[in-house]
Image (cartoon, rainbow, N blue to C red; front, side, top):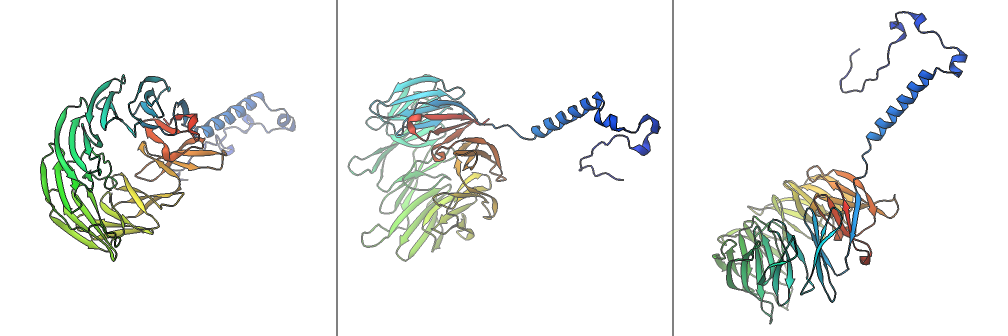
Amino acid sequence: MSVDAREPVIDLGTLAGDAPDDDAYPRPTWRSLLRPDRRVLAALVAAVCLLTVGASARVAPPRLRPVAVLDYQQNGTFDLTADSAYVVVGGERPTLSAYRLADGARRWSVPLEWPSAGVNARPEAGVVLVAGGDRVTIALDTATGAERWRQPGLLGALVGPAVVLADYSDADGTLTALRSVRLSDGAAVWQRPVRADDGWTIAADRVAGLPGRRDDARATRIVTVQSDGTITVLSLADGSVVTQGRVAWRAQSTRDTGFTEVNANGDALHVALHEPAGITLHAYDVDTLRPLWTRAGVPPGGPFACGAVLCMNDDTQIVAYDRATGEPRWRRPFLLHADPVAPGRLLASDGAENDSWSVLDDATGALVASLNVGTPVSGDPLLFVRSVREPRGHDSVSQLDPVTGRLHVLGSLPRFDADACKASGTYLVCPSPSPARGLRVVSVG
């Protein structure tokens, strides 16, 4: 008989026909069955123990371990590094505190001049950025909380070893100046006066939209927009003008719904003209403003970067276009937004109140995996949270493999607001359902 090496083989011992002497194997009597040999009992107990141990070894123990609860309030904000949490508690006396994630120990705490709208930890430069009074940005030392530097301007973009700060007019909010400073010591790299009354951004493959902060270490261009269609492209390296010119434009009017939306994705500038009759998308080279392509009748949402393609959406579907030519490449009904999560992969949602999520191939739109209803938690690793029936009142936490779309269950926790959570390294940090209960730190390693 041949045996497939892939199939499990059970050793049955010596069969009766192979026994050299039947007398060596006496037939059992009723007495022997009722009073079995103690050696047999011991062997049976050992076998059962081995089977039990083997079966339990297949079930991995939960990897979620509550570590600590940090002081936190509803109006607070926080940021994470691989080993620390930096938590802003607002109120009349706002503070910034640094905690060790491994045990929740507070390392330092300092008062803030301003109830900071955000906190940004940059461990590679050893600083934490917060907003100060009079529209300044302050960098604190990650190890001690001591002030390292302060510069005028509000945080605009984090780009590698530098930060771009912006000045705005008190009268109408027009951008009036930009400056780039080194994160490590606040030394000015460059600064220049700028006028842009319709927003500015960096050209980066992130969620599109003006205004808004875009962080991308690979970005090399800043784009400023005037309400007459004048575009100025600046070099992120030295602030010099790369190109300037007018693009297709539809001025906003109170007589109808017409307006223009500008986005910069990677190496292209995208200008969407919203007309009562429909939307036309124009693409320009970001370094020269040379027209690349025009596509009429596109959906109203976006455009936003979808990895290998450019995506737009309406209230029924995502439509993907070739980034080089503007030709339609694929469409996914019932999905409304998608973000790149790995090379060749998008994480897409249906936009419902309880979002249902899917992993897609970016080049074809093909479904890689359906994750169903849940909430992704951004960070490294990428986590996915879902409500479960048992244990009652708990949420399951899984690690998502963005390439295969597989979910590896880590365990469950008492229900929490996953939308407000962050993950970093081997930790998940979430506000408790009641803000007065603090910020929960859970090890996921």
